[in-house]
Amino acid sequence: MSTNALRLIGVLLLSLVLSACGFHLKGLGANNRPLPFASVFLDAQGNIAGPLSLALKRTPNLTVTKDAKSAEAVMTVVDQNASKDIQTINSGGKINEYLLIYRVTARVTLKGEQIGPDMTTVVRRSMSYSDNAVLGKGQEEALLWNDMYNDAADQLVRRLAYLKRSPKLPPAGPQSIVPADAITQP
Image (cartoon, rainbow, N blue to C red; front, side, top):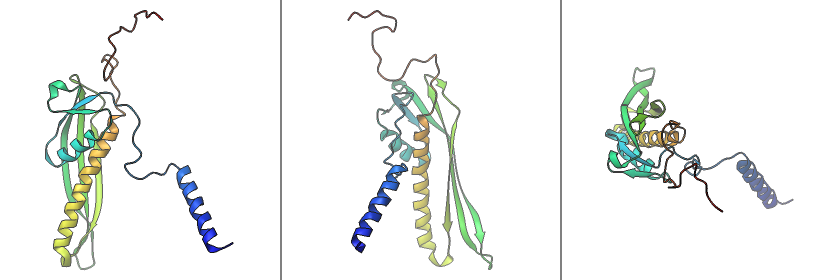
């Protein structure tokens, strides 16, 4: 067999293995679970507000409203905390690596009643550091923080599909005007 034929077989085998294991690129494996509500109002301040709003708007079959009264649910960011800790120090006593930690807690209420417990997401990133590249490391840190905000927002939105709706609340989305116990004629 020629090397080209072996390469082709190798590529086909690799693609078969990757497709069989459920591999997909980040962002392409959409969550197919329905949300327990059809519209949401976002009450968020600070660095998470923009990424969380974008993540909610990307969610299919969900409308992000501009006021809480017209929304079926309200998502409130209760707490945010960002910290930068020293992770490693070199033998000269200088900082070698930082650990960036971003923690955000959100609460979802439906018709004034909280559904599910508060959702807390923690995102961590390690960042190497050098006194010789202070400006570049500052830009790298800013990029890491933005990536962490986007990651936290995506995690919170994915968790919305797993919230349980209270049995005393009506189902989400548009409803039929025909009562459930009505007798329909063929």
